[in-house]
Length: 295
Image 1 (cartoon, rainbow, N blue to C red):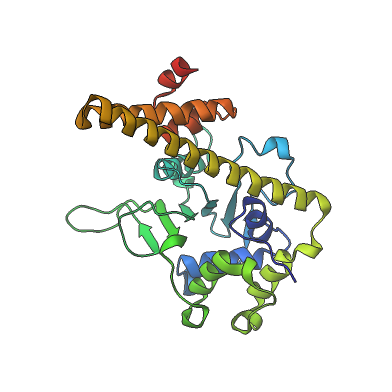
Image 2 (cartoon, one colour):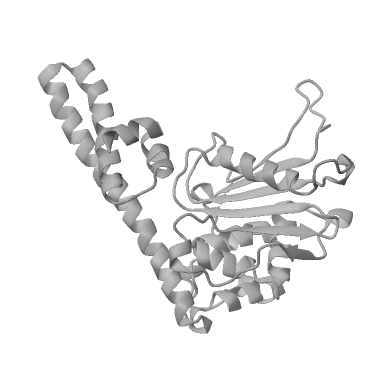
C-alpha cells in the first residue's frame, strides 16, 4: 500500500480539501487551533474544494484551502515546501484579502468575521524553537487581545522531532501524519481508531487515484526538485567565482563582489530556466529592475 506525501500541494489539497469528507479538515483545525467547547468547529464549507488541476495552471497557482465554519469565521490553510523568506508577508496579504472580501463597499463593518491563517512550512522561518507558534495582535502593555480578527499559526515541520509513540495529542498526530504518511506501508495502530485519520489515509492511498492525479502529483515533485537543484547549483557556481575573485583583489572586497556575483549567477541560471521575476527576486534578493537589466 502506498500513501501520498501530504507535503505535495496536490496531495495536501486532496486530503484536506475534500468537500465530501470535511471531518478531516475539521479535526485538523480543531486540534491545531485547540478549539474546544463552544469554540469547537462542527461543520465547514470549503470555499475552493479539491479538483484535479491542469499542469499548465500550476505554474502561478498557490494551492491552499479556504474554509468557513458555522460562525462565518474564515480559515486559510496553506502547505509551503520551498523556502520563501517573504512567507510571513504573504500570509498577512492573504489574510487581509480574505477579511476585506467578506463585505462590499458601504456594508456594515460589523459583518466582518475573524480570519485564521494556518501555514505549514517544510522549512524554518521563525526564531522560536517551538514547532508550532501562534501569533496574535496584542496590546503592548496589557497583552490583551483587543483586536481579535486576525490570528496566525505556523507549523515548522523541520522543528518537529517527535516519534509517533510520543504524539499524545490529535494535533501532534496530524503534524506527524503530514510529515511521515508517505513512509507508511499500512495505517499505524495509533491512528486506527480515529475516524478522521482513517478517512485521511483512505484519501492518501494512491491506488485510488486517477491517472491524471498521479501525473500532476509527479509533475509537482519534479518541478520542486528541479528548482531546488538549480538554486543549489547556482549558489555553488556563484560561490566559487566569488572566492576566486576574492583571492585576486583582496579578501574583503572580493567577498563583497563574490556575494553579488553569486546572486547574478543564480539569477542568470533561473532566467535561463524561464522562472518568473518575482521568484528570482525572492531567491536572490535582487530587485526586479536589477534582474531585468541582467536579462
